[in-house]
Amino acid sequence: MADFLISLPALEKNARLLHETGVRSGAKMLLALKAFSTTTAFDTIRPWCDGCCASGLYEARLAARHMGGHIAVFSPAYREEELHELLNIAHHIDFNSLPQWERYREACLAHPRYQNGELQLGLRVNPCYSTGHTAIYDPCVPGSRLGIPPEELCGADLRGISGLHFHTLCEQGSAELIDTFRAFEKHFGHLLASPSMRYLNLGGGHWITKPNYDRSALVQLLQAIRTDYKVEVYLEPGEAWAIHSGVLRATVLDVFPSLGYQHAILDVSASAHMPDVLEMPYRPDVYCLQPGGTGKPAVSLPGEEYSQAGESGVLPYTYRLGAPTCLAGDIIGDYSFPAPLSPGDTIILDDMAHYTIVKTTHFNGVPHPSISLLHADGSRQTVCRLNYADFEHRLG
Figure 1: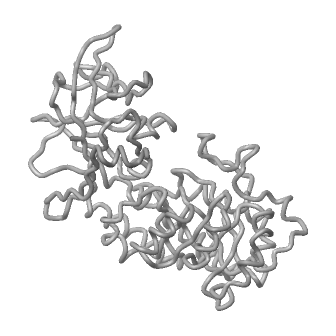
Figure 2: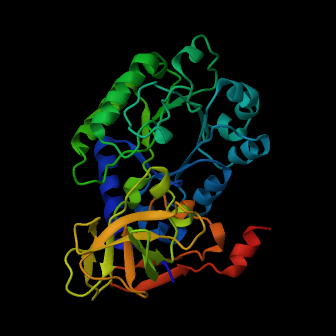
Figure 3: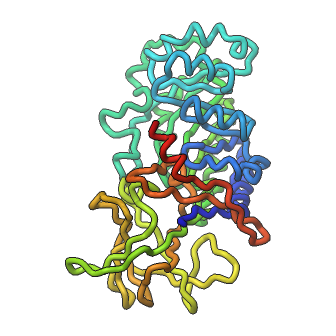
């Protein structure tokens, strides 16, 4: 049975590093639930986390119930009944358009939590400055629906607004953030300098826990923003909390030749279990559980030996790793191995904790991988095992 395996020590390492960066800079570090929402792991993260960023009501409920701390909410649009509940949960609610803000302004300003200062309200803005390379993840592409462009705010009534929010990065470093902030400052710096402004949310996409990330440059930027504009600064990384902390362990179901390829069918699906492999597209590192191998994935079990797969044709045996679904393009990729694959072999897909578990589906009725935690003592705890009843119930 396929299994998402999450290392609690690896999660804690990331969380401590993010907390240290927050302490040095004075900024608040929030966990973006859209990237990682495995609540059974929250006890490991909670001591080092200032709260959560939620993409709507369900994630806000999850944050309030399982994490606590500061809850910042942004959605491209709110339904009225959702917003009424969010007013009782969130500490920041950011609006994506002036019409939405104008529609709900009076209800927000009349709420007791706003009047006593427990709730603050903000706008997401678009600095119109792209640094990414994948259009589907770039909120600054022409025609973007995310964030209010500068010209739309000219002469706008910002009564009740005390914060600004932008989110434009994806898997990027501090240099891209610095460049983006300068573009933001050019368009919106005069608004941020207003005495009514109390916070700036720099969004997510920050690779703060990657080994080559320049955390000193980030700290200097955050300190300067707090000093120059006298606002509280928030970051809401997602991947940085969970990167290199989880793997997806799969099993080879069948191996066969067809049309010039050797195919290995696994019990996992890119479409259903790893959609970024198709959407980004993203090529995960792959390992096989084989004795005498070299290298190992980010999360390994005691006593296991691994061989790292190479590009197609690099090692003696090349296979196209595919899924047990009817989607012709449900292919993980072409990989080579030092020894032949056989049914029953274990394949490990590396770095699968973030933006995987939160995106999984039951497409084609493929059984869902279980979710397990790896503790510091090497013990393994299965915390979620979905079955046929879950599949049937979800579909009504």
